[in-house]
Image (cartoon, rainbow, N blue to C red; front, side, top):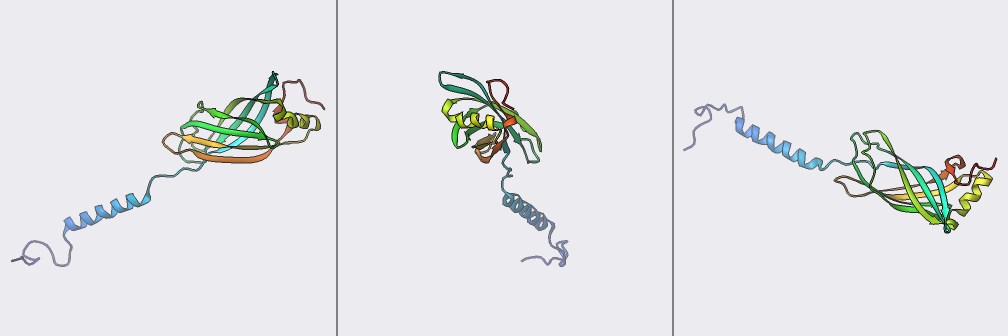
Length: 173
């Protein structure tokens, strides 16, 4: 036979403490599982400069400067950066870099990338130097952050001639 609540030391109006603790633990467990893994916002990648360092055997060696911005409240340990750059709709450089410093929370970093392309791929951009017109570019790729799947990025824009340096001496004025 079951004892009445008053005889076992439990008030009929107050739930048993063990049941309250179990219910609280269960609700905390459900809340923790429902929140899922934290998410991160994609780092912003911008083309900062393009420099033709030299031309050898019909190939132009280019040095591309990228600026990365981390919009997250936590630092991002960047493992790799894959990229493809077009200048005036022509392939200019592509590849992968494994040397990227950790991006601080809300901070920036810079990456210099080297590539070698056919001179014809940058011919229009070189002509734009003389006309002082900005050069259209497309920058696409992925940033791989330690412990995360690659995060895609894409940016279109125009790069000012002042940021497009050549190995041929000073720009025409």
